[in-house]
Image (cartoon, rainbow, N blue to C red):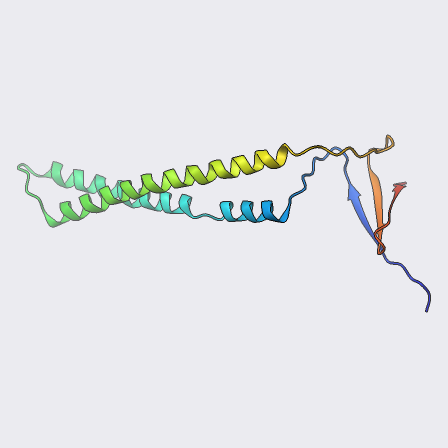
Length: 138
């Protein structure tokens, strides 16, 4: 059988900036990004604020303050929602800071220069033996 090589083509734009990630950096980025603190924060505030508004409106309807079941339930859920929302907001901001630090670390890696021979776009041919050669796009 003849020695047949398969060829894969990659179109590359030299104006684009690419970053290389190690497996560890990719795992760190994935674990930090996949947190649910933002969702819990929004959900807690979405429960707490309306409950506090209901508790305030319950009190404002009364001539004389009489704690009702509706007032107590709304007050408890409102305070709990705001407290948990604040807690989750802090955790969300801390995880966002970790993402920013990791991204800054990736962006500050040393740059590697690739010579393009004054061609705006090149076609890089990679064969199955991992030999790289460049061809002009015509």
